[in-house]
Length: 484
Image 1 (tube, rainbow, N blue to C red):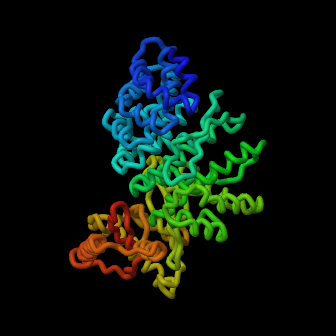
Image 2: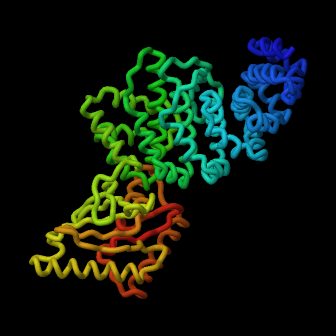
Image 3: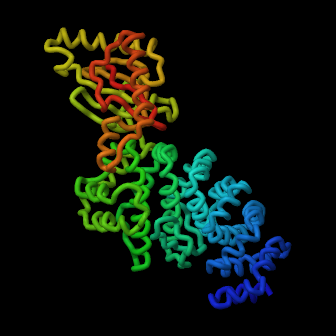
């Protein structure tokens, strides 16, 4: 009987008749059946019914969420895959998403991201996409460790023999009505990566989530997906384009956070970067990113190679470019008249990152004669030692040491995650908005407290206080930098 219901539910016209006969109620009850064939046919039939809006709403009213989540925890892979497929469709309803949260569905879904079945993964990730639209759920996904798990799915995986559903996500939010498409050889993982890109897009709306995506190597992993790929068929070419647009969208959402601007300026050539900016902030419409895909596909191999090298340079797991003293140099963060700043880590100290300022001892700002420059270098080393011992304030950068090696002076300090206040001002102009008065007071008070501490309590004068030396981090935490 469940097999007959499965076949009838495939017909759009028969679905209304089936729910009028209360067939959906019987099918939901049979989700608790001990016979696996009955369970599978019931799930297939409910998936068919749920393709139509009214039957889907009626199924959702029967509180089937808890049963489906139990199946996701305890049953075989095929049962889990079917249950995830049904739950993905039901999550179009906000009440179902709320039930998923109530019945601890978020940790259950995240635990399934360790599996190897591509179809199950695809369904689970699209459930996460829909849950992430809620700010509280988005926060829970990060707290429970979901972001590194999602990013891990973007790395090359061994293809499964299962077919996948290719979601046509072109709307303002995650599309629920997915078109079933059999994956061609060689493109098995692309629909899964598309789903992951959509999940990251929703998560990055939360500023803290976005920062964790960056810190977990998200820009590198997403950047690789925008590069052109060879396609063996028109269907595969369409899938590749879909993936590129999804990756560009996730990157553009990350760019909308001021603290990430410097990273993106180093990724793209000027003409592509201009188009990237022109898309606008937080645009979910996927076709808005087609111009970027078209542009990158017309670039020369030499230009593509430059972009690829720029993307590879953002890889936080790459080998250091060189060493200075006991520090491994990872990447250039910025440069100016006084020198350059690099991201570094101490050798054999894990993934704890620091910032290293490099200056030439021949820099005219240190003095006109060799004697004056030597004296200035000595003063900087002494000042840094004093500041390391005496400066302890949440709004003032922490210094570790300064040392000279050959004709270079190096200052090691805390790596401040964020963006300069000056860049926030520029971003406000782009977005046509202003700081709220509450936000202004929050930032201003921290600046005053930091300056009072270094000037009045420690008698240290900041000789170059500008908006570019005031960093704003998570929740607008102020850090005054560049005291040396």
